Amino acid sequence: MPSARREHGNHRCAQGACSALSCLVACVLLLLMFSGRPATARAQAGAYTPVGADLLIRGRPEEGLLVLHSGYRNSPYVDADAVVFVGASELGREGDVMTVSVGLREPHGYGQARVGRFVLSTGAVRPVPIDGASVLARAPTGSTLEVFGGMPVAPELGPRSFDWLAGGRLGQKLLDEHLGLGVSYVQRRDAGEASTEEVGADLMAEPAPWLALNALGSWDVLRDGLAEARVSAQAHSDHSYAQLFASRRIASRLLPATSLFSVLGDAPSTELGTDLSWNAFPRLDVGGTFALEALEDTVGYRMALRTTLRFSDDDRGDLRLEAVRREVGTSAYSGCAARVMLPIAERWRTHASVEVAAPDHAAGRGALWPWARAGASYTIDSAWMVAVALGARATPEYRSEAYALLRVAYNREVFP
Image 1 (tube, rainbow, N blue to C red):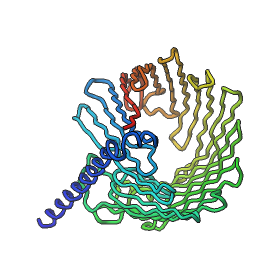
Image 2: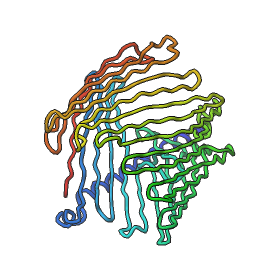
Image 3: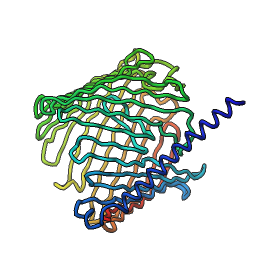
Image 4: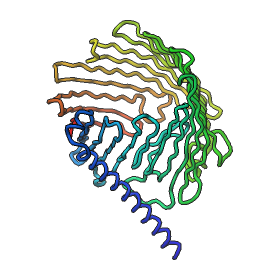
């Protein structure tokens, strides 16, 4: 019984700390938006507050989503960001804070910090939403040191018992920033037990103005094995783009050690391929992708051909076509897609999309899986926009499904 009370207290403590942190950052965010330097000084410096809201209703009236976003931008010292959504469905109404954070910058670029709820991504550390803080310091020699720590985000500010993550990255830029190296470390704990511990390295090089090289790798310390490795080379000119890429991922080492899925199998996957794009004419792009894939001992491939025809030089309308083929073991299908977007007036735009996928082995799930949607949008003024769409599809789970979408959006930049 005492252990149960301690666990309950830990949950309440973690939940209270998370709620207090979010509330604190939200208060600071509001103060940044509506206080500080005089309005004239802020306007002269270009600082502004983006305010936006998106309402999306799908199907029945009780199914919808409201997204509110705001912040503080273009200040040499401070920026802030907040995104909150409120949803409604047959199961009930839900709401959550996606991001709410405040960033501080040294105006000469020697350092920056961020606190609150945000998505952390640095070096070989995979993106993860956290409630915490990150501090980055830069030296004139090109060296950087970043440290971070906090709690992994729980939906709806839910309870957590001794869940936290911490780590850092040490980087160095060389040769006028044409070469960059970095070493990262991250440890994550779930209920006090280590669930992830990784070391990683990343490399960036630009040996020529038209060539860029990138590499990244991470090693699972807990399981003593490679977790992920990726390399790519991109070459481009005024009218073409080519990329060679390769990756190796071990699924069980990409998941936390405490995850149920981490004990279901090792399931390594490998990919080697190329992606090409060519501007054949001023308004016509053609390209494609071809890659060899391996999942455990099964070898397959995926390929795609695509083209985009723009109807005007200012990209106000286009037609996109794509054909795909993928085959890895028993998972094999062919498909094609078409999308058109037309501006029929200054404020009116229409769009339509059609996709069809045909599996090689239907297994009673339908020989074709079609999907289609058509809609239109109208820009009322510089702040308001409304859009509607109708769609229908057939999937392996449903023989047929139809839906309607309504979106009302408001966005404005306010100079306080």
